[in-house]
Image 1 (cartoon, rainbow, N blue to C red):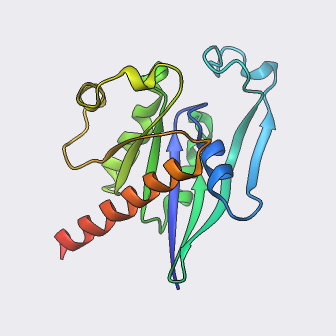
Image 2: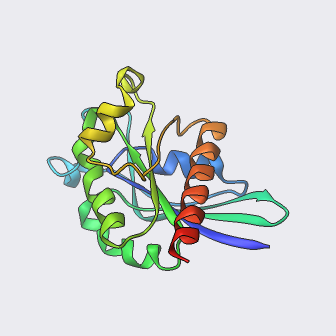
Length: 182
């Protein structure tokens, strides 16, 4: 059995908790807390008006791919005040799925920068919020300043099949990078 640690990262409200919850075969560990008036002016929930909670430490889930591979999913908190957790969460990971909400594209840059600066494999998952499918992948890649080697996938964090496809893309990408490094 090969266990792989995978991070699910991205900006506030990009769908990280939803993806971990959707993919986990066990009841996920979620550290969500109710958003309070203290977050007004700090967390921009205008485009996600139904969002009532936020992750304050991490989310955790598990997904068995087959008899030889288990993925341990760790969702990162999205707000900068919780970024101190990222180094601990990233220790030992094979890579990350960085979720992007194209309505708030600037929110994903800290996550992309984090993995690029540490040379950790990642894929960018464009979460299918309203309007996401109307964007050309070449334009999205340019807007995110992604290199040609970074996989770009469209997914719906509520749909297990598209979430698994993003994880497969990540594992394949990480394995390809490992093979090239040898």
